[in-house]
Length: 166
Image (cartoon, rainbow, N blue to C red; front, side):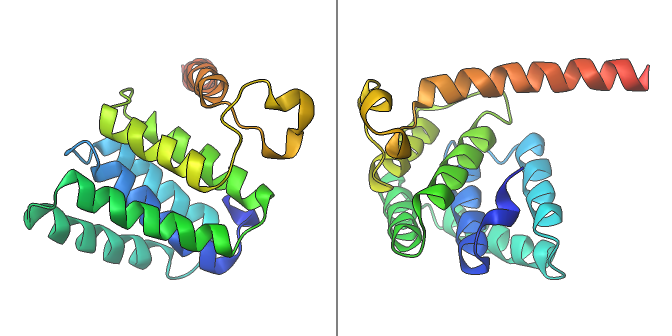
């Protein structure tokens, strides 16, 4: 939805983070695959799908090698740190928002996905306190509030699809 606003180097980092998040619960579901393809289309880069295929292949290699949760979390955190260094708060919000949407794509929000999202929230330096909105709107991002928005958005999207296609 907002990915075009990311710098090209952050687009690829976002795809890497997305693929790690997709594999975090040990299952790469069809809704998650579809989201990855939508991301490629949104970037409108000729190499979009090939980048995703390359990232998926790398992630599958890590999975087959029996990567432990802490190793996956370490890779995720190191990419997040790179993103933090090369982004402003607007890009950080976009990345976290889109990652959260991806985490909800398969209708389940596993503990491992939750840990990665919380780690991204912390690493990207968003305020943890829900009352921060009053004092500093630039650094506010309430994961629960955004999760509720995604649930409503997905429900509305289904309703619109039923309306248009039936």
